Length: 103
Image (cartoon, rainbow, N blue to C red):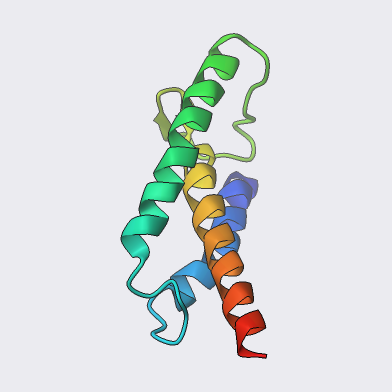
């Protein structure tokens, strides 16, 4: 069960985005391309850096808490981190801005 810890955490963090990204009342609706572009601009350099740091032995990922599936020697969950966190952050930023403007 511990193998699913990191994946479960990523799914919990992704839940608000997956639940609300198509909500027509929020400003993110219709701007998914922009959100994906922003996520890509953040994810690519950090994934490259993560690959380098892992290969150089600066850190590692426990097989106890991650699945065996790897993408360029990174656990699937680590790659998902760099997708989920930026998208969810954008959703929170846009939603808070929208709610503040409504006041």
